[in-house]
Amino acid sequence: MTTTTRDAIFAALAFGLALVIGVTAFGYPVGSSYFPRSLAGFIGVMSVIYGFRVWGSRAVAQPVSGVGAGAAFIAFTAIAICALAMKFIGYEATTFMFLFGLIVTLGGRQRLVAALAVAVGATTAFHVIFFVLLGVARPESLFF
Image (cartoon, rainbow, N blue to C red; front, top):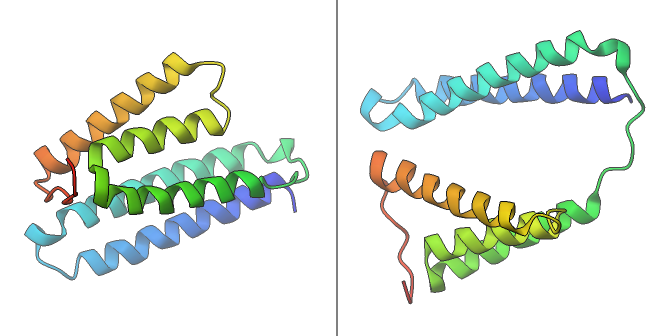
């Protein structure tokens, strides 16, 4: 399998996921399904753009190299630890540590200041989007 084939399959699956989410979300009232509708639209548009980009670059197809199973294991383990830690130290601290740790672990060791800036910026953006703009209830925690 070439990288182009793999990427085209991914784009098609992402578009199918957007359709499923969209059909399901449009079955609910607008007030309670605004976020899933927006998410479905965003995933759909991005998968179509990605599909066209893959289709335009099919002449440069290369065989798929080994998938980083170690990186996937690290990411999934970090997500599990983050979910458990959120109950104790709070959303913001956990999200910051998760993002910073993942960036540094998966290759950002040379640019610690950039990793720190991305972690702080993303944590702040997530907080504003979910808790301020969308009004989602903040997860309870033991300490913060």
